[in-house]
Length: 444
Image (cartoon, rainbow, N blue to C red; front, side):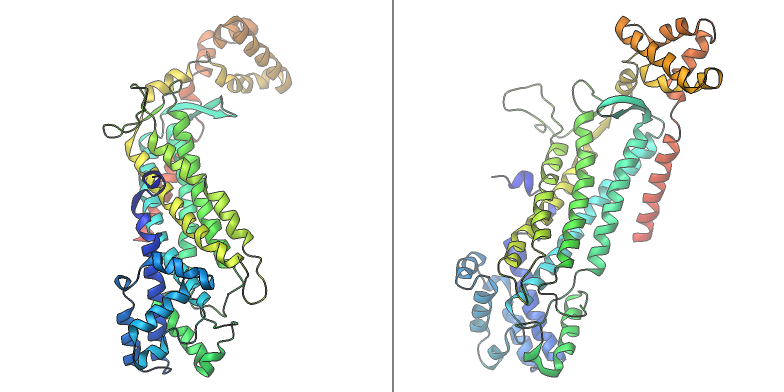
């Protein structure tokens, strides 16, 4: 019922039961080929095992039901695979492996395939943000701290900040995908004893067959890789959630500085016909908010007993798949939101003027500091701001009175012009957009 929201985009095909089954069978087939390459089994037997490793030959639901007997689905999968292979080759199914070897390796394959989807959506979202940063480099808007207007900034600088978060998260995910996803093969207690002296050779061939990193040693109860994956996914969700959350705030009726313009029917309400909810950003945020709890489960599961964990390892399976899934869905929803986003500069300007110049008070203080000293200048402007609010008058009017001829009205109006107090915001937007485009060129 909730898959439309929490299973958005291409990620669902890479994290569900079918994806798990495919990864488990890929691991079993690769193990057979690796054993053949190392001379442990006959190549013909490896071919027979590989042919039987077709997802069409297995029912994930049936494997799940059968998993209750031994505590994991690899045990019934190996039994069924052995039956399907038959003959002499059947003796070599799952050669030298333990259930955790296959399941851990399958998780690494699942992660690699899912991360490719996540990264594609994050990069597409980044491309859109780079466009927005460039197009709106000088589009003035109110910067907000503690949800209150602070100083002017530009929408380009805001988009650049979002972009920086996405690019950092993508870089970390890319590093995990390239360097930290490793094959797992250690046998019953992580010693490779059943493979004899060919064990290290089989491990190297196994990793090569799958295109995964070759670990220095089995990592059955050393779960740093899983924690790194969890941390990188949680960071990505944080970056997505930050961007989506800001979009939701900027799209509020009273703010109205951006609008999600989706296809007919999107953003509607079951009772309110006028609603235009930023549903893609809301959905991205809903997905992203699930990441901390899932990541916490994976961090907690690092504490594992001896050479095989009693429960902690098992707890990783759904948490890791769900974390990959919600991260992918969050990234896909953000890409959708940004594709629909319309910026409303005129509303940004109107909101800048809503406080009658108060958000430029700092600039007036700076202008008076050389003459009055910082503390006296600050006190004078603070008093003027309080009067402006209490008397519902523009800050320019009050400051003109407070200064009693020290500054012309034209000078005060110039000081309170938000377009003239943007600092480095336009150039910061340019830098972020240029850095993103350089990253994209390098990736190609």
